[in-house]
Image 1 (cartoon, protein in one colour):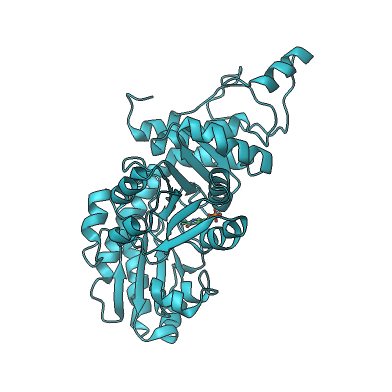
Image 2: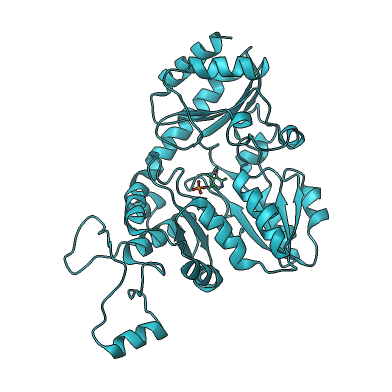
Length: 392
Ligand SMILES: *Cc1c(COP(=O)(O)O)cnc(C)c1O
């Protein structure tokens, strides 16, 4: 596969054909596998080979095809596919940590990730230090000799803060800490986790991989040693493995991922440009757009800014709601990376439960909108947004 470019590999990598030679990947909807003899069963339980499976909670051929293809896409040796992004995040953290370990994490995290760290892992004796991820010196100050693991979102949700990943990896590795990146926002196409040296990249495949608002899924990518060691051991015994039908839809979705994400990112860049300087807005954030304070860092790390934009409507919640309610094409919902463009009001939905001081610290104001740019014609999207902004 190595001699082919990424788009080719995203169509072919990991394919395993049955004796029938099917063109499209088969979906193996089976819980278990039949052995030729009692001796063969015993041998498989001792050491299952490449194409040998035991039970769907441990893995199955469709899931393995998807794991191989997405690991290849992100540049990692191996991957374990899970029921959701959160199964992947919580599983990876739990598999790698024990009581007494110290974790440093950026503060700007997806709410459920924060819950896993602060409410669940803390209960099991893991000590957490949260830092402003955009402040390089803060990472250096927080990482200690007993820091086992560093966690961050490469691009934060919903405010699109960008972290200097090379710097964080350098400081973490100097202290023998593993770096886990929640890479949902960066997209698997523009991901730079591997390039910057992150040990593990976790992707909510609910987002761009599915890309059409259907399936929940997640994947943990890393070295074979980590994935087939502690990660697989934890996942297979606790029941977080992806089901074969989801793995099959994800495999087919990977064939078009590059086309979809590039089209969405191109549209997002155009939408950001069209909204730049609009009198109804007090803030505009798109990682590679010059209005973003970390634009240079974002451009140095990635070829494009992704598919999500954040902007702040002047006049607080009332003005913001009237803009949202005036949208015709863009749907009000709380997911992102769908083919359908989606606007989210984080302060009253995804981040509603966050205390006000934390909302303030993270920049989640009453006027903030997270806009996920879909596959519609960008001219129509721009017209829809500008018309809605006219409403205020
Ligand atoms: C969506 C998301 C998750 C959770 O993924 P699910 O598939 O919904 O469980 C985790 N982290 C980030 C950054 C996300 O955007």
